[in-house]
Image (cartoon, protein in one colour):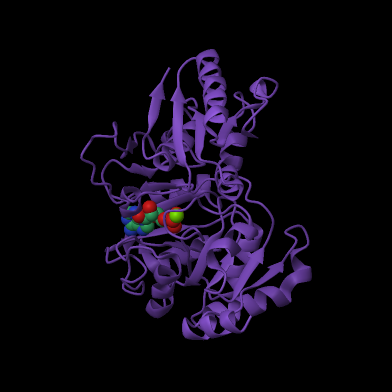
Length: 363
Ligand code: AMP
Ligand code: MG
């Protein structure tokens, strides 16, 4: 106890409080929002839920506050933050609407899991944009997030509330795992419905491009503004210089080695069963990600069911949670099937490949 106290004093760690709010009865929690908003206005960090993942929030217009985010996460300083707003009209305060496509996109997808990149105005400090002259902006649909933004002055810079490189948190307890002692407050608003980070759409170029796939698909965007390109590496060996700086970093990684098993369903299942047998013989604990269809076949190992093959939104919602659970259960290896690369599946495969460091086994 004394040792912990001394260590804490030396590294300036603080007590991290978790305050629960019920998103269906938001008016009962005004005090929590006032306290959280005051913390943000005074330059502190507060973690909060959004419909995608939990965010680590700071006043986006305060350079010193933004800097704190980088040190709490251990995030490289060239990896810019997303500015969250709660009112569409606030966009004009921080960015230029250079294209008529901006209004169409906002009308169609905000509030929601879509971040847009625009040229920034002077007011936004370079600390928030990682030195770029553009700024990423999103208006989340989660009511807890929006209330907090309102009480904080209107502009919250927030990346995902995990330590850099780890899976993004979809529950307050996962934020606590990574941020305990580093931030004063976590608002617990339950689980995040979508479970993967927002789609990022660059609207500063002639042909807009998706820099990160997410909850809103490229097809949905094309229905509103026409042709959109996808700025992702085609193969693991490609020399890729992403326009979203964050996409070049190792990400979403659980502690155990993750392998994606790609092939027909039956062959993937056979491979998993054989691996479980082998694992048992050599005393290794194997984690398996699978869908409900295979539940009766996989009887050993640490098996996590992530929805069904038919509904990949359920897979998206539980992927980061199960990756963190495998960490807690101390598995040595994790095997996951690949998922159909369409719709939300594009985002799932993007995160899985990064978590696996691109280790794909064809069967
Ligand atoms: P996270 O907050 O962890 O979801 O990360 C935010 C993502 O948005 C990272 O991949 C950033 O590189 C990307 N991003 C933020 N601002 C910009 C910008 N101005 N231009 C391109 N990408 C950006
Ligand atoms: Mg992140």
